[in-house]
Image 1 (cartoon, rainbow, N blue to C red):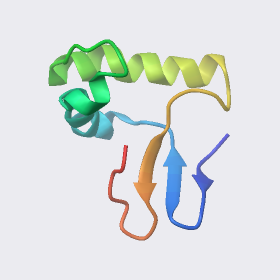
Image 2 (image 1 turned 180 degrees about the horizontal axis):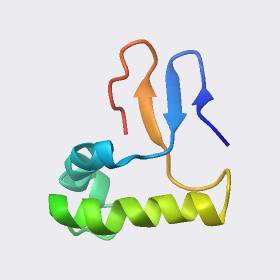
Image 3 (image 1 turned 60 degrees about the vertical axis):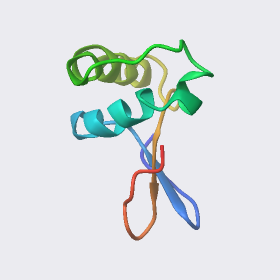
Image 4 (image 1 turned 180 degrees about the vertical axis):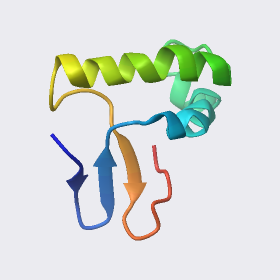
Length: 78
């Protein structure tokens, strides 16, 4: 499955370029309260989180976590 587009948003697979975006999410207590509550370093995001997300897409095509961007500006939404 490739990118999913709506009127205002694009969903796509995470890439290594998203490490800083994921680090920002992991550092947000409002986000992490729904997950495991811990924060990760940039190295942990790059070496553990991103490979896990990529593996999920390979193992279960069409399922997994997706990066959300605003259409037109490509601003990272989550």
